[in-house]
Length: 289
Image 1 (cartoon, rainbow, N blue to C red):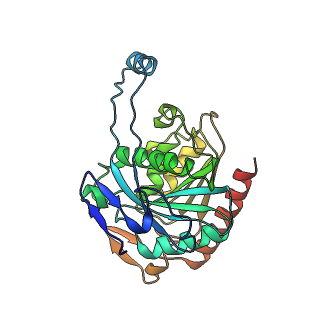
Image 2 (cartoon, one colour):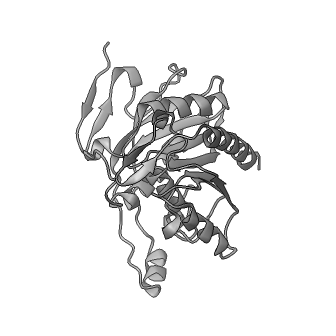
């Protein structure tokens, strides 16, 4: 039977080849498979609302949004540690998804790439940060989805993102932020070239930040200042600043650098290779505890 997809802003149902909508078919373990899930729906408890009011804040209920993602698992039975990956402001790149899905699965991790734009009818968000809060809940919806799969170890799931996805990653694991509303927690976090200006460095989980020295879109200086002003609370933050590297230094498609939205983006092979080694070592350490 041919695979069919019925899609709308509110509903996405994958039939036939995926079996039950939103569930990964382990028979297709050698490539990314499209899956359906929802962003986390959050209803603050009365206690959380009261604490927020005392701090001059207002917590609102957040309904879940239908999303699609692409899931890859390594060979074997598992349960495997896993990584949720968030894309940047230009959307989910097929080449980036393929490269990192193959890389992470070869290291023994299940991988779920989250597409935050398709079901919302969004092309890009590079001119503004309007979707940041929603994408935090996308990350936790992905965490919830992965945690219910038999071949995934729910205690060992990391969050990773690049550029706007990296900024969302930091926001998602900021101690005392959205993470305190969530029942399930990430084990670790990795952020490629994030905007560190909105974070205070107090992270709920071990966090690795990878950024270029010459980044003029999300300046390394902001991340250095964040780490320097770290209040000493939360988990360790590891910051790696790559000399001579610019924004998107890990994207092979940018071997010929160019201007995007008034900023220079350019691949840097040395920085990219070292960052991959750093990510592998960081995940191994984070998941060994």
